[in-house]
Image (cartoon, rainbow, N blue to C red):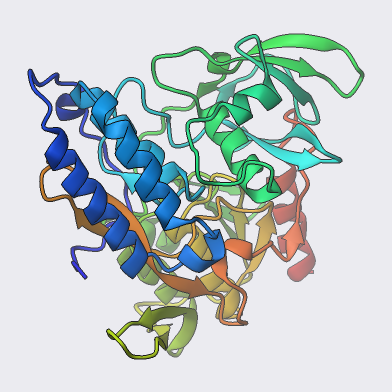
Length: 410
């Protein structure tokens, strides 16, 4: 196993991925294909659950290599292979203009066999011209949405399985960087409309976090900065200023890229008086010609500085990712906060970086599973105080969080 530096923030390498080499060495691509499949077979902790036939991958993708003529096609080749596992934590550490984005500002789920818009990234929306929650997705760029799913560029996974189909549907909504995203929708009132997904404008947040007070309740919003060590000092300053509030809300709904356990532990350490367990790790140790053996351990947080002892509520949603998810289940595992919101991004496992022999970029694989202290695997966690989004006209999750703080402090 190639153990490299643990990194949770996905980054792009546009300059290399978009360059065009005069000659592509297909033999080197074949070597790298064998390498990534070997790494997946030895290290990907969810391989058994995904039920993807590695022989199918080997046979199908080898046949595609003679078609590769450019660097862009090489990148897409490996990108599509990772997409076979319908896992947002498996990513290539580069992309091209033809690559799929990592996420969309809306989320679709399967309800009664139909693909329905269930969530909009409301906490990050600067402007949205219409509430489309509850709308059925009929077409994408003028093509029947079911057909677009069938045509999605993977071969060895079963697109009829609900989990796989939902993942692919949301990958299609993320869209390619160089293509439009025009949806044909049927609203709950049966009216059909055309909706340009790129018309949704997202906020350009500055700073590591924002903090404010509403009716004696402190609110700290993390601005997708869980991978920046400076966040811990910034959080300390914000929390110290809010020390006299009657309760605190920590908003994790914009932690889409996750981050590092240093930041998470630094934040949680301000809310406990003694060391507390916050998550469980588990992976399978393998030995050639010997049985596989599970290795697991509980990770703790130690107290640090002055403690905030009043009630705490954590806000989460579909764009709470990776370490953001770990932070939420950690607070609940320590019995130090109530969690409010919808399902999170469900980024599965603990990710490590791997490298190709010939490509100048690498890829990420989940090598260990992560669990809530109560035994729930992290990606299956559902907030205790669940919020089903019904509108973009008001912030239902924040409203529920405030009501909960008020109830806890009566």
